[in-house]
Every structure is written in C-alpha cells, then in structure tokens.
Length: 151
Image (cartoon, rainbow, N blue to C red; front, side, top):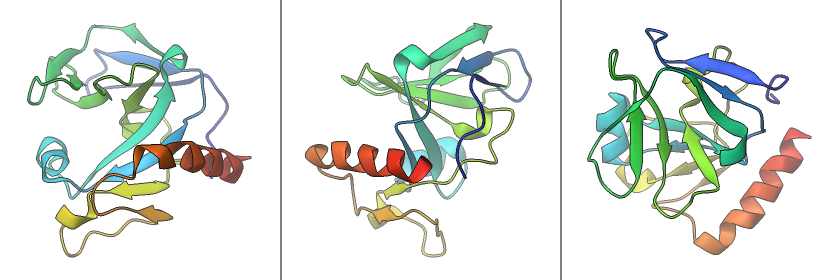
C-alpha cells in the first residue's frame, strides 16, 4: 500500500516528541539482528529510510539511547520510545520507526536484513531477504525497485 499523502505526522507514545515527514521513503525494511530484537523488545525492528531533508522534529527533543555508538539511536527521553536512527556516515537519510507515524498502516517491509539471526518463527512479507546486509552497491537497485512498486 502506498504511503498516505504527505506531510505525515507522528510522535512517541507519550506525545512529548513529535515529528513530520515530507518525503516518501527511499526503502522500507525489517531488521532481525539481535541488537534490534533487544532495542525493540520484539522479533525485529521496522524502518522507513526517509530522506534527511524530508524529516523534522516538530516538538520536543529526542535523546540518544542504545549503545551510544557511531550510529545514533533516538528515543523520547520520557516514554523511551525508539523513534529513529541516524546511521553513521549516511547523512542523507533517517531510519524512522514507521510505527511512530500517526497512520502506519501503509507500511510493509520491502527488504529484511540479518535473517541469519532471526527467531525461527519470525516472518515478514519482505520481497528481498539477506542473511546480513545487502551489498552496498545493491542499494540503488533496491531503492529504484521500491520506488517503482510504490508508483
């Protein structure tokens, strides 16, 4: 299902941090790595790669959580909702947790990663699966295919 009309609004569980996206996702994903399992308290995390210039915080100030490493994981400092990630060295997009949007019903993961670490029963409808991450040179093709699927 294509993304609803933009801009789309969202926020953390308690509403102290709000955000807006004004650009369509470049790609949607599910990550099965054990780190995402622990941070999301679930079988996998979900992400929508939003162009950085189409993402803004409109209320509040998220805090950095997770491992406090090179990639920055942002949370609401009050309710501790994991809201988005800014991956190290990839400044042109933000990995938004799509369930932070007020209407996440459009979301379907197009790619799933780290299936080598997935829980045996965890399944997604993703069209592309990778035991770890896809090769960096595959991303342009995946982004183009995802855009075509959303047209």
